[in-house]
Image (cartoon, rainbow, N blue to C red; front, side, top):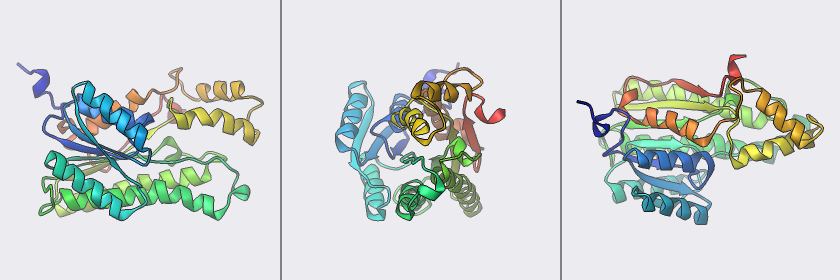
Length: 273
């Protein structure tokens, strides 16, 4: 008889690191992975919120710790990965979640603003993958392969006016994922790399979308903008962080052992129209 402990979706014995884990999607991913049995290293620049989320996981019976991480800093990535390996005995899963969004017309955006989005959303994913692969590959400090899950967006699959910097960054994550997957598979390292593409999910970032659309002149009011966003999702509701975290759990688990270089769209039908 198959028990919950035997289920391939369980993560018992695995160690995961989640970037941008203090709140929103990152927090949901960390909590879901811990609930499934993983030992989780939460990382973020929001230290107070990150420690509070970590404590919540521990109080609910999970194993978790927190490490400060600016994803644009290579040394801090190396330190965070080393902390996960030292604290929990390895590294099996990386969730590259940290990201930012800016809504501005191209002609109004500064080069500094453009580069700021790319630094976190693209450079951060590259540095995270580099640090994780170095640890997970044979001879690394963990050395037993693993799963890297990069959070992209539906904006990495289709274009949106006012989101050029964000769309460009998430499109880069989409194709970087595929290249990294092929590279790791070709080396026989046992490292899988996949991307997840949510539509509008109820997080702090999504909460700002209605206001930004109104400020941009795309809607007459925030209420109108909220209704327009809702109408983009055929299933009739916005996503919940748990909807995305469930897919991340699948990709972290042995249930997805033959999945690499794939993109998982979690969007309530948004891109099917």
